[in-house]
Image 1 (cartoon, rainbow, N blue to C red):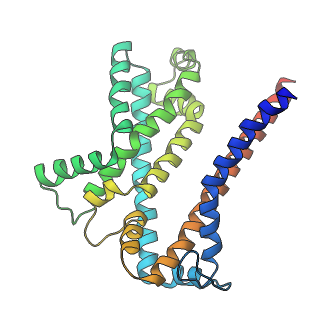
Image 2: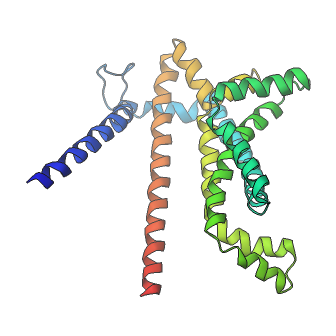
Length: 272
């Protein structure tokens, strides 16, 4: 009986945490399929919010621009983060420690400090106009690259370091050994880092606020500006957008977990 009580308490706490996390999202999703003007107000079933989301030119442009920014900055951040992790891993101990320490600073630093600092450096010091997208892209790359580094480095540590040396001993060039030996071993970490970089870019508000052109909005900056105003139709369309983002993230998470389980099952079958 005592063991049952001990198990029941953590389960109850976990259920409570899940309710607190997912109940607001579920409520938002339910109201996105109504014609209600506010959360809590009565309304009937309607898909007008989703129609509005994909037929309003400003919303379509904002979504497309945000996705393009996220994918472009994530590709650059993945290249830099992966190269940095590989270079750091094969460096001397002191250099490796230095790079790991420096990489942790942007991770723990507040986004508002990062965004403001990049704005001062690029716009004020180097004179780059905010009408270009260069400060915004570089800001998101700076925000994401350290997380890619942290995603790739554990995969490098799990890899047998003798594989690279063996490839060189067998006549492979460093570039060939990198492509055929190291990258396949750390590919899952690179994919995880890329996905994290995309998520960070989509979620960012402070860096985008300080570095974006005045005529451009990401999802985060658009949502904040819309909720401050009185455009009820835009607000309710954003309920639909939030629901779609949640469903996409949920599908990716479920697909990733299922793939890992299938991979573990196949590995167990081979070992058996």
